[in-house]
Length: 200
Image (cartoon, rainbow, N blue to C red; front, top):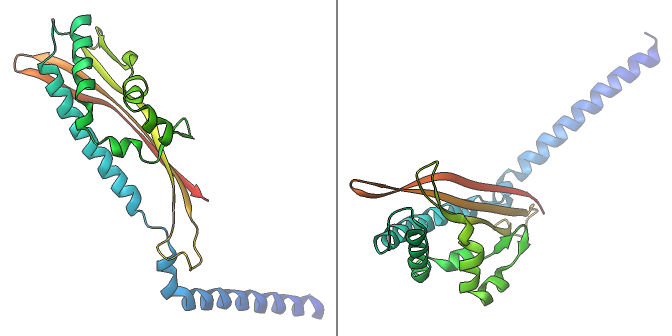
């Protein structure tokens, strides 16, 4: 290797070491500030909790609506009566949770859904074609349509350098209702929840 090659090898090694030490120094100097500029997952965890709470109320309402249904279990009369009972008392659920930040097929529809109110609940959220008797599974299928929520998650202190996350959360639910000697059994058969985010 000639002298020029030796010089470049030493020069590249020096530059590499300089860059490594620079990055380490910058990270060390920013260590106290970095934590305050990160996006917290708290909003997402609270959303998961709200979904679980809503679904517990949904199951309670399904059970009470079954008790007052007319006709033989599985008949069209029974299914229609059960659905009517459920929709009659649907106001006992936390509908504010459903309406806030509401999206459908990635389109914001909160104001439309609030203005249509009961029509949205009856025709979009709990449509007739998602509540039916399934002879193969020997039970009544009760479904909630897929809806979502979209919002931007910001760092606690926006004055710091931070990367807001554009978050979308999609969820639906399907229950299978069966009758046995002790009464009605409500089973969760499809936990359809999808959440993802991207830097805004």
